Figure 1 (cartoon, rainbow, N blue to C red):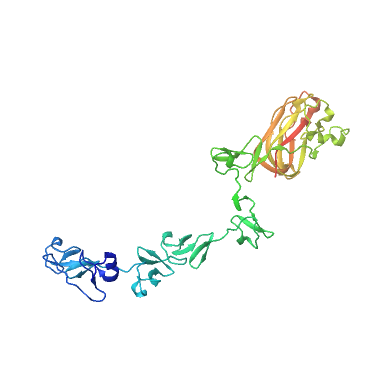
Figure 2: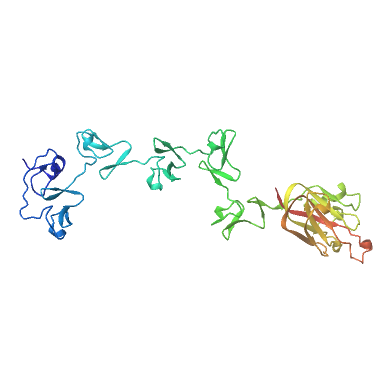
Length: 400
């Protein structure tokens, strides 16, 4: 018999012994293998050193290791068939493989690993963690499931096009997160804005921030939170609304009128935007009464931060005292919420800001002198009579 390589020997004959000639175990032929004085499998032994290679001393006798088998007193390695080995039929291939074109190949649902065929994990298979699931899937409740943007096909997870803002839709379920189906098209919810087909939350006042760029318009990042610029803006529903004079040009009603020759009763003079008026006929001026008042109808719901009264600049400024401002939705003084009170007395030309503390909602702002006159050197002030005379009234806040 001619010499063959170990590789040939392993395939054709299965077993090779050192530099000896090959021995064909498959067909049952054998050649004599001499051991001289070498220890052999089956010999008595006291320890492993007295046994041949690849064997151990068990119960006083040399025995082959688990992955070896005895042949003529030696221990020869057993080579299992592997994927990629030449083959003539399926029986000569490892488990879960077939003989294809003379070579062992794994079945369709298996993959090669170290010469063996392991089952390819599939969607729906039982699992203990994500590592035991196929690509693009996760282990959910002990079963492999595709990720959100993937769908199952033949046990695998294939990517699907994620729904985007602007896509046609029939209902909300066919739209991306934080969006709804409006008139057959996906649109972001009110507090979200579109970005690259997705809906991102609109930053709001009070949200955490790292710098001003992560805050909404007209706000700044203060101590890690988005805050409105308090001098010029008012927070409402997470946004910063610009504060303005809500009273300018609005309808005015009053408790009385000083003289009938005022054009339009002169009440509108309180909200005409003019200050430092020296012509008394261009001032707001009630008649003489104990509790004179004026009401400004804003026309729509607003948040009022403060009310400012401008005292007359011509004379008699000391008549202004104990002026309370209230805000609400009624012409009834008792049903309005108090913003604050200027106690005084004032002096000619002074300006008094009545801060509300917390902004008050309402459509009506009323300013009223709430205590009888205590100026005793004016005959017209007898019996506590007052007279409300103002250059201008402004209402600082935001319309909602």
